[in-house]
Image (cartoon, rainbow, N blue to C red; front, side, top):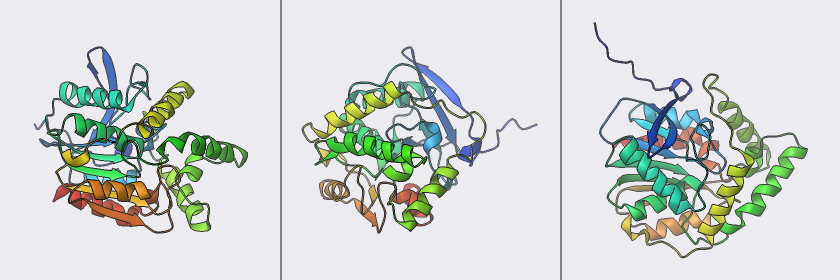
Amino acid sequence: MSTTEPVITSYAKAPAKTVTVDGDTFAYRELGAKEEIPVIFFVHLAATLDNWDPRIIDQIAKTRHVIAFDQLGVGASSGQVPDTLEQAAADAYRFITKGLGYDKIDIFSFSMGGMIAQDLVVAHPGLVRKFVLTGTGPRGGKNIDKVVGVTYWDIFRSVITRSDPKEFLFFNRDAEGKRAGKAFVERLKERTVDRDKPISNKSFSRQLRAIQRYGRSTPSDLSVITGPTLIANGDNDRMVPSVLSEDLHRRITGSELIIYPNSGHGGIFQYWQKFAPIAAKFLTD
């Protein structure tokens, strides 16, 4: 009788797992067939494991081994959110190398996750083979430090309209953007069991301050990124200005840039039908 476990390719059904490294417990989920080099997903500000769009993660998991995780101090992971994104990158490195045992990975990142992922590859250039950077910008990027004001204003707007803040933060407020935002929020509800713990207000505030420090600090040397790199964003990103995606494209030799029209920070979620197959092919070829 075979003891081989069936391959899970639906994020909604990926089991909740934990691994302890140096006394810190990291919560994660994995799906797709096992392979030597996995795709590690780095998530955005205020997000837990439940914030990945299943339309994107499931498409990639058809051909790749996908691992999503909670940073320390977030969701079901232990500890507290670190003061800096450099430390978050160092924590991620421990999770990947000591916790999971990988010495080579591919990365899919969004927003703050892309900032942490950049810090990771700058500190450990040999770790990352392929890189997907979406809705993000470089260390020291213009106006990244203004994310705090934008975020709190949109949270206020969402409260008075009884909406999810992501509908304001990620999408334009025209008819098309509103439709895309509501559809995205509904997709995040598809997992009905073993859902993650929501982020605390304290952890959210610590993340915001860490992003602010990142935006106000000296730029990193991104010439260390030499592998295939895919950069994507909407053309009207209010959280991490779209021009910063173009800045990344200029600074990362050989990178590919996609800017989706009439869309904001969540452009890849609004245009998931176009983006998901492109990302999956990039990570599989």
